[in-house]
Length: 334
Image (tube, rainbow, N blue to C red; front, side, top):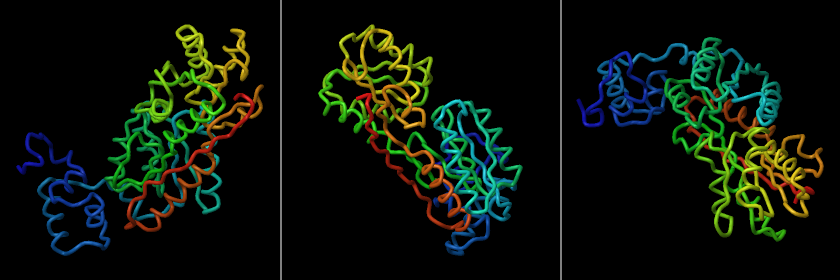
């Protein structure tokens, strides 16, 4: 057994495309090209790949391969939760762009549960979709990476870390958080608390907040929901009653923060300014209208479809990691 696989106990039936690539010393994409009869490799490389496939007993996922060899003019979208306004807006962008391209969309959610992600992937593949757009669950993209390695045309949205060799699209969350804090600072705020979440880690919003805030960070983490926002804001006021600004992980938490601040007798924005993140539709209709970081979810969804469509049409193309910008939307909460 070679050093790269030393100490590893692996049945032949468990071998993956990634294992073959490591054995040969080539990229997973090269192995996929050999398996699918594409071009872009030498005869010697093809022979080495075939030898490793036989040695390791790798058997390509036939359903996954069908995503490359057949066309159904359908794509899948696997989101996290319909209760978060973020995902329906992304889905709208996916649906619009898919329709423009003559594609039909299947939709599933995972509620951030690994088993539901696996089930959704299996369902999409069994329906012979041409490709899948998916969000990781619990910040773990490994099931999606395996699907891509097995030949599934896949775009991962908001992976926790860069994924070389995998098509992905990520909003520039850290830069957005820095911009939010800097905006508060330009309005004279210096005691800025961060209302965050520990359920989706690593959290680039928190990283940006820490990078931009002056003095000791004031951070409370809770669930990224309205209930979490209420409880988290009360905790912030208990620990730091002198705060003059709150930066929230998302708009729902920010709106909950405004409610708690009002109940405590603190006027927004005169006493405490509030900034959210996402720019959901509701954020412009509350009182005061919420300053927030606009992620342009519809465009994010459309970009995901275009990236996936390019992969479907050009199986040998090099993977892309797209960074989607976020912009500050100033309203009266600051």
